[in-house]
Image 1 (spheres, rainbow, N blue to C red):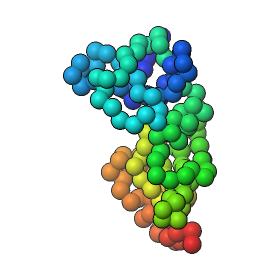
Image 2 (tube, helix red, strand yellow):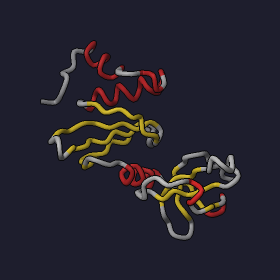
Image 3 (cartoon, helix red, strand yellow):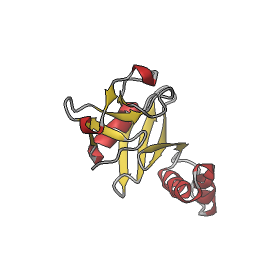
Length: 153
């Protein structure tokens, strides 16, 4: 029997929609809800109730699609997936700033970090895996120790 975790990326059996599972704060986890990718943020009480029988685990490709639908403000020009999604790096073009940066995900969760170099992004993800979310600027600092350039320019 499948065990689904909070905020896990899933696909509905009937419609094939990709989204995340969430639980309303007021029901303290009594009802599992489904938040479809790309629909923004809603009060969880207003989302449809789903059961474990209504959803399937999303494939690797579907999880990447989900992350792309939820990524806003930039065009994703390249995606790097390492170790079945343990590390994901989006090369993003920020049109307003005419700037490229690398946005990172660890185990399909937004690492909330952007880097100017791919190598720094990869090092930052490894540091976050082992040091946790408080790894700060480890990717940049380790890059300096390795005498990497500060940017691709």
